[in-house]
Image (cartoon, rainbow over all chains, first blue to last red; front, top):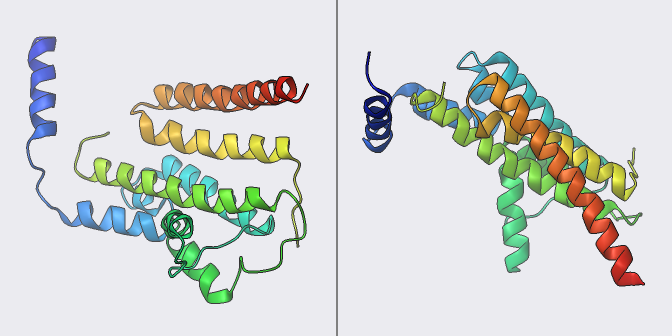
Length: 142
Length: 60
């Protein structure tokens, strides 16, 4: 049985060594970005995947229902560009919202700004979820 | 359909969803994920109350 220090060193060495590129290590993050939670589902992490999907999709839909603003790719202003970077994290949800024209209406109540934040954070959370799917794919996380 | 939430309920829903994602992505085992998710939720909601009281003090 290896000593705890040996095991620790082996894990550290494994984390530092370059990981081989596998189909799953490319497919999982790509799919996870496009469809929130799908990167986990494709790796048979059913509960994690469904929870991530439920949380991110619900957050995005709530953001739209709260009249949040969906940022355009060519905003010009630096804050608009940052907003776009956050929004694009939601993958297909953002593409769908742009295609249908959601998130561009006139704002009629004070808390609509929360909707904009919901949309951005849904995208940013999906970026974290995508990175997690990648870590599972390369064996860095169980 | 337009959803007009109060500031508190919007912050509470935000906390729930963000905590779920943080819990799942930042820890490895199921037990740790649940614990960390709950910790994040408590911190979020606690932060809302602290910020609320700070604003109340500043307003006086």
